[in-house]
Amino acid sequence: MVAFVISSGWPGSQGFQPWRCRPCQVEPQRQWIKSSAVDDRKGQPRSILTEQLQQWGLQCPVKTGEEFDHAFALHINPLIMCVPNFLNKSECEAIIAMQMAKEGQDGTESDLYLNYRVNQELSTSAPSSSVSSVSTEAASLIHGENLDPSELDAGSKSGFRTQVNPDAEVIQTVILPRIMRLLGMAHTRHAVFEEGVWVRPNARTLLVRDQTTVHYRLGEGVAPHVDGKDATLLIYLTSASSPQAGGATTFPDIPLRVPPVQGMALLYESRGNQLLHYAERVKAGEKWVMQLLLDFRYKPDDIQIDYRTGQLF
Image 1 (cartoon, rainbow, N blue to C red):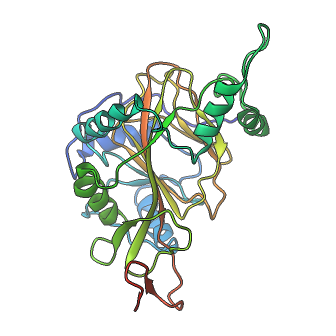
Image 2 (spheres, one colour):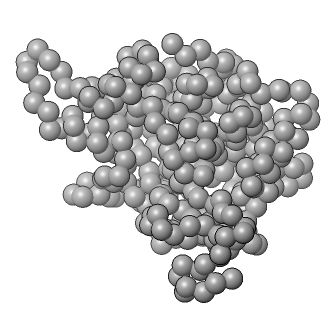
């Protein structure tokens, strides 16, 4: 069983302002979500965070006085950075409304992920009157981490994952510009939506390999897995209604448990560190997240190619 360090404070649903956060909103979140691996002495986490981001190849504006100076490290090695109020309430609601319109349409569930495989396995199994449907893939992953059924159940669905239209206004005018500023690439690169593995990032591009939302209903979560890209940006579009509402993102090997807070984002490296994580089942209400898988690393000595034009630079 994983032991977690969480303070008793509960931020609940909060109002959000675009672009910048209210300082008073940051501290409750920092106090509420803690990891024993972070040295929380005054000034120390900021310098460590900057150093770790630089080692990761990022020049994020997280120093005092910069746009994302309210970001803080939940864990150092591997790095997990928390960005409170990355989106505001209206932006979260706009994304949910856009994606809700797709859920009733056939063929809109993304079939590239563990969520889909588990859902398909459960929907196609034919349980007897005495045996409940169980996903064998989810059961194997859950058993491997010795998780309690109260945290995750192999007999429950894994949420409904839907692709986000990369041309949607909220993506082009809000999400992408903010991501590029967060990563310190606003003036050096442009974002390209590209799933082809033959296309690699270079000095001019950040590759968004995938952009999806996941809608978790009561009892739903997703089994332990690794994302497998240079970075994952996970954005909570809803808040948990209480500390007992479930739906936390859990990193069992650290250990660290991050409950959903609307608008808050997590930025972490998954591939290089094989950073295992799972979504705890929802115990009350429902949960919405948006996930973007990012590739940005390249070798400066390699030939740099603009894959759109074939031009070398």
